[in-house]
Image 1: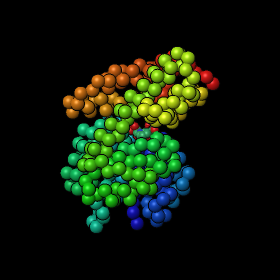
Image 2: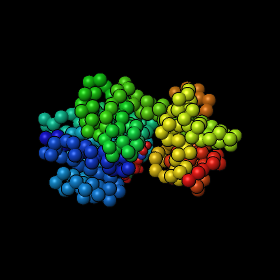
Image 3: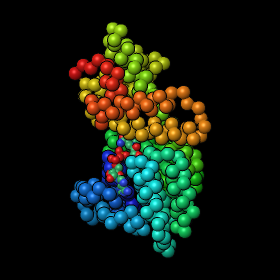
Image 4: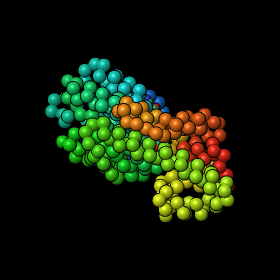
Length: 305
Ligand code: NAD
C-alpha cells in the first residue's frame, strides 16, 4: 500500500490533500502536518481518523511516507521545512520505493533548485520536483488544477500519476526548476494584463463608453485576455472584489518573477513599476485582502452595484 504525506494544509493544500485521500485506495495511508494544528484536525474530522493521521512534525511525515507533497506560502517556508528535514538523517526503510518530494508552492527558481539538489544529494537519495499550480482555490477544490512540472524525464510518469488525483493537466516544462519559471512567467503576464485592463476600463468609461460594450468588444478583439473575459474588474466591483486571487499573492508572485528575471539579467521594461503599483494598491484600506483586480478601485474606476 502506498504511503502519502502532505505538508501545508492552507487554502490550497487542504482541498488538494482531501482530493488525494478520496482518490487513492482506502488501504493507503495519509499523514499530514501543518503548523496550524486546526487545519490538520479539520481534515481528520472531515474524512475520519481511519483515513488521515496527523504527524507530530515534518520529519515524521518524511520518515513515514513514500510520496510527500508540500504546499507552503513563500520561499522561506519551503527552506525552513526542508532545513528541518535534513537537520538529521532520515534513513529510508529497506525495500521501500525511492522517496519523492513534490513541491507545489509558488516560490523562486533558485530556492527550488537548491532544495532539490540538497534532497537529491542526501544519503536518502530522494527525488524532488517543482510542480506549482494554476487554477486557484476553486480548481483545488474541484480537483481541476494545472500543474507546471520541473522534473527529470525518468520521474515524470510517477509524478503525473500522483498529480492526477488533484488536477486535470500536468505540463512537463523541463528539468527541475523550470516548473517554477513557467508559473512565474504566466503570472507575470497576468499581473500586467490586469493593470492594463483596469486602466483601459477606467479611462474608457470616463470617456463615455459603456463597460459591457467595452468588455464585449475586447472579448472579440486583440486585447482579449483572462482579465477582461473571466476576471473583469467592473464585474468584480459588483461583488466588492471579495474572493478570487488575493492582491498580496499577486504582489508576491510578481516580486518573485521580477527578482528572478533581474538575477538572470533579463531586461524588463514594466516589471518594477508594476510591482511598485501592486505594493501601493495593497496598502490602501479599501483594497487590502481583495481580488487583485481591485487595482481598478485604486484608480478610481466607476463601480456599479
Ligand atoms: P495559505 O497561506 O492558505 O496556506 C499555507 C499553509 O502552510 C498554512 O496552512 C500554514 O499554516 C502552512 N505552513 C506554513 N509554514 C509551515 C510549516 N513550516 N510547516 C507546515 N505547514 C506550514 O496559502 P495557499 O493559498 O494555500 O497557497 C500556498 C501556495 O500556493 C503559495 O505559494 C501560493 O502562492 C500558491 N498558490 C495559491 C493560489 C491561491 O489562489 N490561493 C493559487 C495558485 C498558487
